[in-house]
Length: 267
Image 1: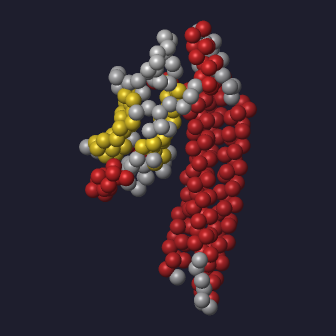
Image 2: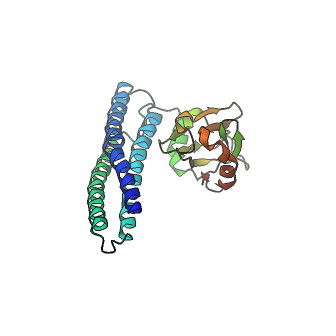
Image 3: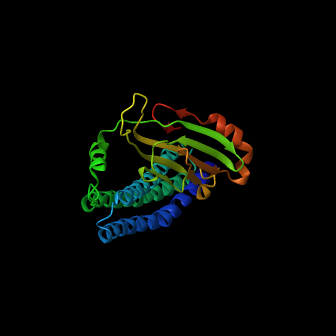
């Protein structure tokens, strides 16, 4: 019965999240799409590439959060399968009611997923594939070949900061408008963009698309206060503050975090 009560509490949390935050976020995602389209039309002679990229990333992040909640609900059903009533009607009835509640919540989650899919499809339909601003001959050459860039893994260092963790990422040669950084409410930090080749080719020149992401659980880190700065030497410094109760765990967190240097992905 104790395990049933625990699952019931977790289902209540999932229900609240689906009916409040995820529902509001769906409306916000739609509003973001509409606002991005309106701003692009209002600034038709400007390069809206960064604006489009942020909008698309926002839509994908919302879909990820919906899928994450769906996975949690599915896991609850699996856990309930292992709970036996052993002839106790109270357990059998409560388990049946929980299954029915979870199935109803899965239907709600599926409806939100369909909405997120439609928003992503709509984005592809109404957003131009390339900026309307006419580039210079050099920029045109770079942009036309950007899809052919290889994958590139920037050098990454993790150190202890007085407030938590400091990520230092070597983005030398990457301009501010050539990368984006985002973080979800759950703590998924993502840094992605492109480093273009030098005008004069060099055997030591490294370039390509990069995508660095790391999960900093919101139960340990103050994700609302994550901040960053792009230094003159090209390094991007990201500070991820720890919550007060987690400060004693900092050493073990650093020991357990590993980098995959060939992909640029942080695990």
